[in-house]
Structures are given as structure tokens and as C-alpha cells.
Amino acid sequence: MKKILDCIAEVIKPAFTACGYEDSYARVTLSNRPDLCEYQCNGAMAAAKAYKKKPIDIAGEVVAKLDGSPVFSKVSAVMPGFINLCIREEYLADIMNTMEREPKFGLEEIGSQETIIVDYGGANVAKPLHVGHLRSAIIGESIKRTGRFLGYEMIGDVHLGDWGLQMGLIIEELRERKPDLPYFDQSFQGTYPQEAPFTISELEEIYPAASARSKEDETFKARAQEATFQLQNGYEPFRAVWRHIMDVSLADLKKNYGNLGVTFDLWKGESDAQRYIPELIKDLEERGLAHESQGALVVDIARETDSKELPPCIIRKSDGAALYATSDLGTIIEREKEYAPSKYIYITDKRQELHFIQVFRTAKKAGYVKEETPMVHLMFGTMNGKDGKPFKTRDGGVMRLECLVEEINSAVYERIMENRTVSCEEAKETAAIIGLAALKYGDLSNQASKDYVFDMDRFISFEGNTGPYILYTIVRIKSILSKYREQGGTVPGDARILGAVSDTEKNLMLQLVKYNEVIENSFLETAPHKICQFIYELSDVFNKFYNSTMILKEEDQERRCSYIKLITLTKGVLETCIDLLGFEAPERM
Image 1 (cartoon, helix red, strand yellow):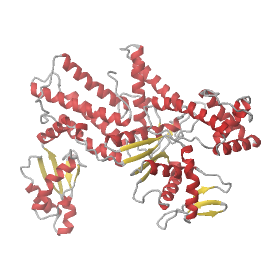
Image 2 (image 1 turned 90 degrees about the vertical axis):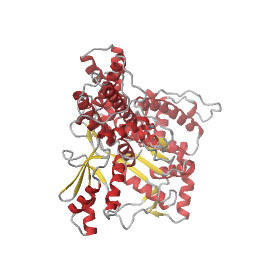
Image 3 (image 1 turned 120 degrees about the horizontal axis):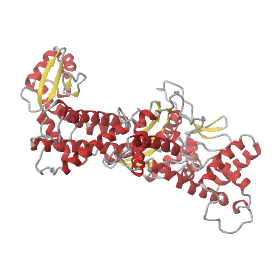
């Protein structure tokens, strides 16, 4: 189904050409004066210069050609040359009926099965997820879901940090604590145990202890570096420990990401890219793309058009070690080989901006990625506390993500129990659904690149631009439809949504027709906040319609059926949108 703005433009184009003007001037936008009209065309302003006429004269000619149009209830030319447009109620109703009967409410699948890699998550194994992992996970999940809904082949990769010095630190700390394990016995000839020699709780305590020790004990740090080197060069005892670390960590990560409603198609990490790195370095050297600089191997990525100086991408340090950039390039080579994506989307905090400029430019300079392939780095801002500083626990530490989820669920549970009308068990289940919506919507409703304040009281409010308000609107519609069925109401198969008879009803339809454009633009612009804004405005206009309309008491049966179909469409659109954002609505609140 075509977007509403395109549909209106198609109607206006013949009017422009009939007056002797190019139809490219028939561009339509939402009105910036909704008190005067619903849509507007500013084409006469642009055409005036080309045709050496007054804008108002051109606008007047076009308006005269549109007289009697079945699409518009009112068309007028306004100084200095705007064309103001109001849509006929019957035309809007026709669009509602089309949306209601078409798959995905008329959304066009623009993806054509193009493959897009979404790199989000970025957790480190052996470490618990904390609040710093929240934004990447839920922004990436929403973008992946929206792209898939639009017909793209979306591949979400968590891209774990699983190959650096932390592995050597864990191995050496484990050796200190459990020296009798077979991994540290060079004479051991048997099969290494299948069961890990630690739990996730022990593992999460081992790493910070080892990290702190390495900062004070140079000998221990050197041992950890040597263990890392041995691991990366295939030493089997340490590979066996590494596999245990991966198994235990992945089980915990999958559980915690799952509690956020976040899933990944690929659970790959830096380790998966290592096999490509030797050939990558050799290739860059042999082709003269990489050169020595102060003992390191680098690739120049600066361009004459750059507004600021950009340092080269370091491929190999002076001590021979590869870096994150090398690993990311190896990952790109693997992705090109296995998936040949038409686009890449990386989601990280904005501190990594330079890193990805270097990696993307190196990948294209070397021809690993085609020049025309989009490589998008969606940089997100910081989640701050009410003090304006990065969000911390009360004692100043970094909060574990599962603790944040528990806190917000508990706060919602307490609010539900203030007006206790359900059992404790149902209240807990409902609180988990609402809590997740509050958390995700509170984040996603902000433009990703901007910092925002985590305000739990505001996030869990049932009023205003919040997740619970959106859910409350959906539950309200569910309640109306349930009452309608309880009263014996049914909607005949030939029932239609009728033209609006009130401003609130028409405003609801005018908001619904934005749906397909919003979904498409939110993905193309990697901007989930546009979906949030749309459903907040949709919820708002629905509630105004509900408060001004006796839906179930409407005496005209045809009109009552029309109302039921319209609010059912509204519910469907809202439920579709919150699914794209990564949460769902309960049956009641």
C-alpha cells in the first residue's frame, strides 16, 4: 500500500501538469499549521522562480484544477503561495479498510531479501551484563526486528569479547586457586573434564580479582600475558579452560539477554576472526596498503576532504599483537565470505566513533567491502542518573543489568498492588511485562545518539509518553472489545469502517495512515524513537476518541461496527509496533 503522502501527491501531479508545470513540484508534506489544514503543498513557491510567476498565482491555478476532487474536502491557496489540503472523510475511511484487510496493515516489504548484518550486544565473556550493555542490546534488537518485518534478511550478531587478556588473567587466577586441576599438569595425558571447574558466580568473581591483581603484581600480569599467548596459539589445556569459560558464560548471557527479550542469530566473538588475521596482515603488506610506523603496522585512512585529522588504523602493534581493529577486519572478511551482506549496522556507544571510521575505511580501501556497501555506525549516548552523571548504584558501582530489571519490576509490582484487584501471582507476571516495556520504551523513546536520564518514577508512570501508557491504551481497547463480545456483539463480514463523524475520529484515522511511512523511515534512519513517538501520538488520539465517543452505546449498528473495526485496527497497529520495539502488552492492567 502506498504511503499517504505519495497518494496525495499522485492526485496533485495532474493538476500541476494541466496548468503547464512540472509534476515534480507536487510534493506533499504534513501541515505545519494543523489548525488550518492537514497536509500542504509548497510546490508553487518553488515553481515561481522557474516559471517567473507569483507563487500565489500558481497555487490558485492548481487549486482550481482540484475543485471537486473526491480526495479533498477542502483545498485552498494561501499567501504567499501555500496550497492547503484537507482530506475527505470517506477517502480516509477507504484507506482504513485497505489497511484492515491487507497483511501487515498495508506495509510494503522493501527489503527484497537483502542481507543486513547487525552487530550489537558486545558483551565480554566471564563478566556479568551491566547497565552499560542495555542500550546496544535493545536498540539493536528493535532495528533487527523492524528490518525483518520490512522483508530484509537480518542477521544479528552479539560479537563477544572472548579472546583478549581477560582469558589469560582468568587462567592464571584459576591456577592460583585450583593448582591441582589437570589443565595445569604438564604430564596429564587423559581427556579433560566435560564439566567446568567453576560456576558462573565463581567465574564472575575470578576475573575482577585477577584484573585487580595484575595491576599490582607485574609477575602475575606477565604470566597472564604468556597464558593468553599460549591460548591464542593453540595450547590445548588452555583451550579446554577457554571452552569451559565460553560454555558457562554463554548460558548466563543467553538467560539474561532472554530476560530482556533480546536474541541473536549468531553468538560469535573475536575468537572466530582469528583464523583470518594472518592472511589479512599478509595481504595488506603485500599490496602496499599497510606500512611500518614507529614499529607498528598501520593503514592510512585520512582523506583530503576530512575536516579533521584522522590517525591511521593500527593493524599490528610494535610487540606483534593484533588489536580490536584487526579482529573487526577479520570479522568483516568472515561475514563477506559467509553472508555477503548488502549493509552493515554496528551499534555501540559514541566513544568508539574513531575506531569504526578507521575499520570501515580500511575495509573499503582494501576492497574487503564494496565501496557502495553502506557501513553504518549507530552511536548511542549515555544513560545517566538524575544527577546527570553515568548511571550508578547507590554505592557508586556499575549496576548489573539483572538487578536493574528486578528493581523496575518491583517498582511496577508495588504500583499495581496499591490498587489491588488481582492476585499476587498475576500482579508479578503483569509487573514483569510492564517493567520490560517501561525499561525499553524509556530508552528507545530517546534519539539514540543523545544522552538521557534514567528516571524510574517517570518510566513506570501510566500517564504521559511512557511504555505503561502505551500498554494501558492497548489493554483499554482489549477491554472494550471483550465487553462488546460479552454483550453478544458481532461484526458482519461485509462491515466497513465508515467516514469519520467527529474530529477525534478523523484525527485517529489521520494518525493511523502514517503507520507504513513511520515504520519504513524508522528503519532506514536507524531511529526506533520514531516508532515510539508514533505510538504515543496514536495512543493519545485514540484516548481522546474514546473519551468523546459512546462506542458500545452507539445506537446505529453500522456505525457501532465501524467503531469496533477502527479500534481493532488501532490495537493491531499498536501491538505490531510494540513488538518491533521488543515488548508486549498484558491482557489486563
